[in-house]
Image 1 (cartoon, rainbow, N blue to C red):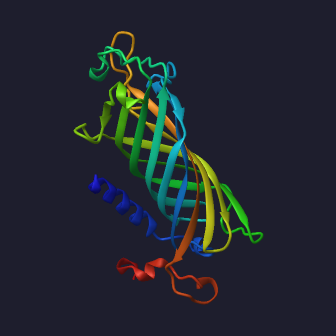
Image 2 (tube, rainbow, N blue to C red; image 1 turned 120 degrees about the horizontal axis):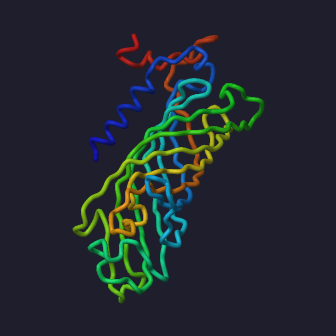
Image 3 (cartoon, rainbow, N blue to C red; image 1 turned 180 degrees about the horizontal axis):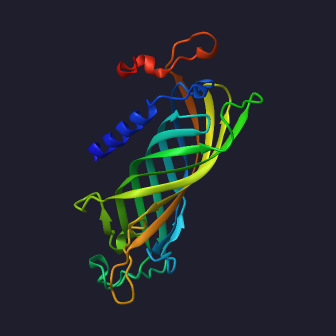
Length: 271
């Protein structure tokens, strides 16, 4: 997993240090931005990969989501970013009824007592933001820039499916702890939000993202069809987050149009 994180980080650095067009240096684009966002998460639904119907087997609750982000402007409209995430998905069922009953080893015996799931997801992804208004247009002290974004990454699971009352039997099934196998999957991100700039250094981002996972384990219960065959599932959860960012300038002061020199002056291959 550390090797995969390293690959994402290297890809981010390569894209970040690509030569920028001159107009991209007319605003605060000559450094790297760092920030933290936090908010709420929730499992939305699961669907078979043929999108024939939706599957909601739990009363899905709101969880917690947080990420740390590094980003770099590529132009007045484009930004590349890498983020490291931690998300909690959880829900419960007072009247358990799952397609896995009788099909999965953890569901051979009927489940009659109330149950819940808790899925702690860690991972990273690289993505691009497209700002719908040019970032070099600042008309006042506070400026608002709407954006859309999309990217790809991975998730690592630490999951529990268990009885709500421990006296009913405790953990039924899980991944990533206490002898359960480790699970990692791909994740695809699409969403949008707004950036509110307070100065050339500090700004805030509010975002809403949908994350799609091509595997049916977001609620820690696999899904089966009427014939007992395991379904290929696409799961979707959403995140609502707000965060504060700071722009680190990496250039030398200068004069006129070159007031902010290119970051390449500091790179061995930039001379």
